[in-house]
Length: 381
Image (tube, rainbow, N blue to C red):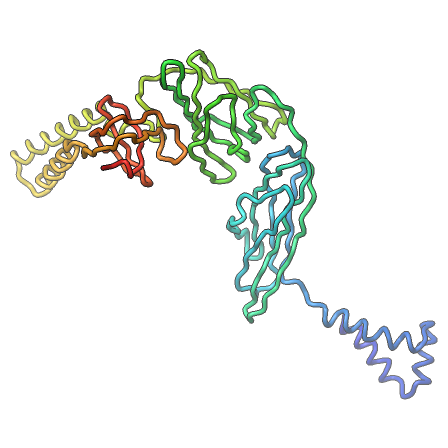
């Protein structure tokens, strides 16, 4: 287009030898020569010096009703129109009542020119604005450029307070595992392992005096928590609700309370030195060992000898008793290897216990009464 317009101007100048001829041409177009002279540089500048964009950035906002404390995704897409882009990165600036949960999420390449990313946001009030999104990129010649998507105002509804509402808003919630054991003469301790999709599971709360979240893990869109609560022994069913954003309705969860005989409840669930499992393993290894000893007696061979030595080593390792450690007086024994875990016992004297495991500065111990718990390494004398 620029070449055509330039060619037109040159032809006009070339075909005229003085301003008289130019005036005649201008009159043909009902223009004066001052306007004509003004138009030429504007046309040339508009097409010659306007720099083409190197990338095209877009986002897809949610087109559904939002609720206060809801977690929701926004999809971002980049189309690269310049093959000289060497590297890029993005940041979010502060929004209002809306926070980014996974601001460091990695971009995925869809094809040669297209990249996408899904960011998750949480709206904390009835109204808010998404954070401004800045995308920076560097060209091979060293030049740096940026593209910006301004924040967008969003509104949310506040859900009605209901007796059994757990404060969780999610597309789906599932109880992966749960266990209830006796805590004292009046209370039981309940531990729930919960998975939820696109949720604010960190806000999970029920109507109990003593409760908490021992650990939380996010692999968006899935969030997992381990929740504990001290509940009355009179409670035989746990009932609570969460709000399902797919159906826009409250969903009911009902769990029968079954008291188990385990001495403790923890994320690993079972004692790794479980007597029955250990016994079965030893018997199985012994049988296999006997078979290979017979084979070795009938027909000697390096392979049979190697297997016999290996099985003997495994049996010896399994038969070695756990290390005995001494735990200090007033040491707090917790359900889980976390700072805020529920303490189910405090030692009133020094005690020798079996060491079962070690994890993140915490020792997993087996008490003389077969109770299993976690203590901080500082308790080890």
